[in-house]
Length: 412
Ligand code: ADP
Ligand code: ASP
Ligand code: MG
Image (cartoon, rainbow, N blue to C red; front, side):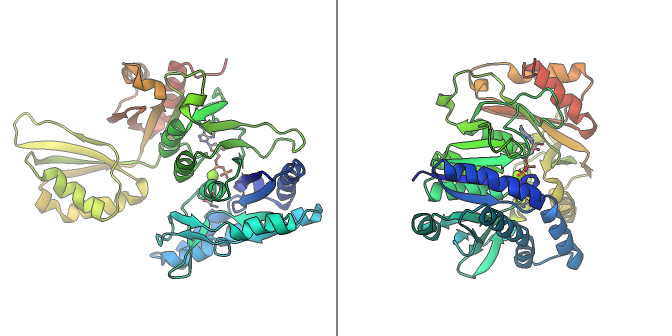
């Protein structure tokens, strides 16, 4: 029998009634002849609530206990969906990450999947024709026996990893939009749904802020060549649409120069004024940040005209901003900067497209269009298939819409 992995996100399982609707989608695929493993998220808002409780209980919380608490949201949904399937006359059972097991690293709160033992789930298929309902987001670090979680949005990754492990024909990610759009349809109503998007572009879109898929899930889909669809759980279960296929670049006929626009508010800017312009200065700043596990993204260093001092600007994730400032201030004498200026009211807007490899001047057009709207660019980065600009967050929507129109992505 061909196998299928179906994943349902938080909004799709927000109530028992919606879980019943999910069960109808599953039933359709079972009747079509698939052995099905369903991966579920926690009910909408549940994970945020659980995270809030953890922080309330302990400000500097133990990440092992954080995982114990936040993994519970998915446990509830898996049990409820198994019950809803049974009510429809299907055989079904729930599986927690540790029961399968989904083995992960020990990085509590952002663990990586190391291996999945699909034996039990496959036995359930062959012996009992039983649907496997798997709690997403969670796994186990076997040497310590402790529950782990895969980072926010991690159920996408559970689903793709499981699809690879059981050699599923495809992985269907059901969510609250009917596919991947040229940009977030919630902020640009003219965004267009894409029929297909390449693994490479989806990876960039996800990394640059399009939260429709967790980055790691796209990496796994690309690595294991899992055909992955993003589709809507709100479709009529009797008349479903396929959504967007994430696939090889070669399988896409029509390529635009720019495929999508993404934005991320998860950026904070730090500028160090009047630092000494001499060898080793960048290392004295970025090595301690790296040692503290703070990811630096955009970096701009100005070439000084007096060869004595210069300015350095870079960005860090918003969550690490305070920590980064404290760490740099502690080393103020060693780095020898005059002033640290920071800003958290910034956003990174990016354009992504494999067509950029073969077209010159794509970013230059954006700089002009943003200038025409009076939007000041604070930092720029470019790579083979994307470029990003850092701007004031008040201009997020205007900038995203401007670039979306500029590259011909607006719906007619
Ligand atoms: P789920 O709970 O199903 O995992 P998410 O909220 O994680 O759903 O992801 C779906 C959301 O991603 C959509 O509601 C949409 O607002 C947002 N999104 C951001 N960028 C895009 C994009 N390019 N295409 C589609 N959705 C996007
Ligand atoms: N429930 C988890 C979260 O909200 C995982 C997921 O939904 O993918 O981040
Ligand atoms: Mg998600």
